[in-house]
Every structure is written in C-alpha cells, then in structure tokens.
Amino acid sequence: MNDAARKRRNAREREQRRLVRLHRYEDAARANGYRFIAGTDEVGRGPLAGPVVAAVVVLDGPLYLTGLNDSKQVSPELRAELAVSIKARCVAWAVGEASVAEIDRLNIYWASVLAMERAIAAAGCTIDYLLTDAVRIRSFTGPQEPVIKGDAKCASVAAASIVAKVYRDALLVELDGLYPQYGFAEHKGYATQRHIEALTAHGPCAAHRRGFWRVRDAAQLLPGLS
Amino acid sequence: MNRARFGREGEDAAVRLLEDSGYHVIARNVRLPGGEIDVIARDRDTIVFVEVKARGSRRFGSALGAVDARKRRTLRALAADWLQIAAPGARARFDIVTIEPGGARLHRGAFA
Image (tube, rainbow over all chains, first blue to last red; front, side, top):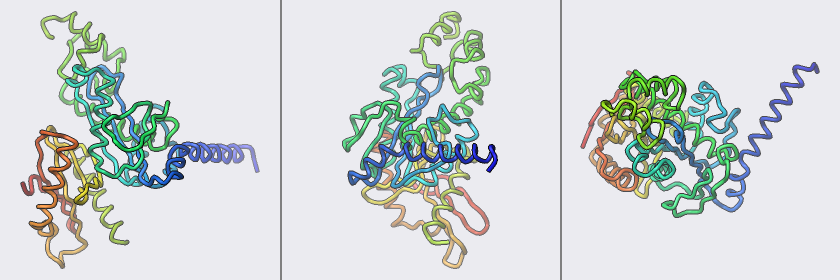
C-alpha cells in the first residue's frame, strides 16, 4: 500500500475512534437503562445582536456522522449537511430562543438557560436522560448530567450545537434583510471589525443587545439615535 | 418503501416547503401524552402547528380531506398542551401541508 492510501486509512480509523469516543456519555446512560437520550446546547452568547438560540436533539441510538463536532469546529458547508443528517436520524429535535429583550433583562447566561428550557419543552416528553454543556436545567425534572466542554465530548450535545447554529444563522440572515447596514448575514452578530464600524456609524438597531458594553459605547457616541 | 418511511419523506418535503415559504421550523416529531405533532414552525411571531398529509394517489380522497374533525380536535388539544409548556401566551395557527402526486402545497390557517 502506498503512503497516501495508508494516511487516508489512518485518518478514517482515527475519525471512527473519535466518533465512538464521542458517544461515551450516551453509551453510559444507555447502559443504565435510559432509552431516549438528549443533548442540549446553545449558540450566540457572544454576539452583540440577535437572540440566543438553543437546540435539543433526542437520540435512541448512536449518531456516527463523519465530522460531527462542536459547531464552532465545523465549516458552514459541513454544518448544513450535518444538520440535515442529524434531523433525519434523531428521534426528535427542537430549538428554543431567548430574545434580545430577554437577554437585556436577565443577562446572557440566564437567557441561554431559558432558551435551552424552551427547546426542551418544545421537544415534548420523550427525554429520559439529558446531557448538557456544563449547565443545570432546573426545570428539567428527569436525570441530567452537565459535561464540561460537552459540545466536544458528547455526540448529542455536539448535534444540538450544530442544529442551533444553523437555525440561528438563518435568523441572522433574515435580520440582515431588515437592517442591511450592519452585515448580519456575514458575521451573524459577532463583534467583527466591520460590525463595530457599522455600529459606530449607524448606532444600534432594535436587534442589538443594549446590555453589552460595546453596544452601549456605540449608542453613546450617537445619543440622538439611541 | 414502508409506511413509516413514506411518512418521514413526506415530512421532509413539507419542511423544505415551509422553509422556502420563510418559516423557521422549531420542532419535529413532538411526542406528547395525547399523541404526536409532526412539525412546529414559527412564521414571524406566530407559532404554526403543521399537519403533514402525504397521499400516494387520490384513490381514497384528497389529502386535505383526510384531516377530519376528529384529527383536528386532537391537534387542537395537543397544540394547547404544547403552548402551555413551551410558549405560553404565544399566537398560534394551524396549517396543513398536503403532498399528492401533483406536488406539495401549503394551506395556511387551514383550520382554527
């Protein structure tokens, strides 16, 4: 066998081992007799604009999808493909949002928990065991396990992060149609150079999080527009 | 193709139609104590409960007609339960997506 072929085979085997490892929390829960195992995760804590979105993905078996990982580690093209495969293979999925007004009222942490609670509620009553990315969902009464860096360690949490990311990106593209001056379709609300410049030039819009200091600073530069 | 697979593919086609129509799908296959809701979407600030009816032929009547009074009553009850736990106070609507040999069609506000 030549070198290139061996490298490809090694890469494929490495990926298979990674995918098996990615199910260790789900496998452990299944070994304890739980059937419908769900992962939840949120995206959009960092951006200066737009809602925070959470998703929950319910699985009743392994989800061996090449490239499945934390949404931040996956290219937009692969993310879209993975989202389609995840939605086709899972038992149920749902997303939840917390609005900009709720982010400003509660703070971003509690708003993201609220979004996760909404996603879980929206999925109905099929969840036997819940895995999260280091948060405890108090409104969920069943067994749950917060996993530090869960989005990179649990297949179900990684899947949720991808579903949430694809949903939120679509929302921000829609928001770009409403407020074209900021470039939401491109940076999805994150604090890129272009976003900060637009924010300084035009002031914040209704979709901006006023509780974030960068948004407040921009508003203060343009008092008439705030 | 078996019946479950046929239903699932119909739902996938329905989801594509909803997304093309500007909806954001927020949940699939929501199992509640009294039954299952196929698709729940958001159309701007309205929650839309979508019933998907796929028909391979018109031999047994139209797909739209297959969502009868009893099915509607079940859906209304499921929707009320879902709204209470997931989105209290939200505005809601019922749409039907029919999938027949002629293609997929969205019936907005098919019943109340």
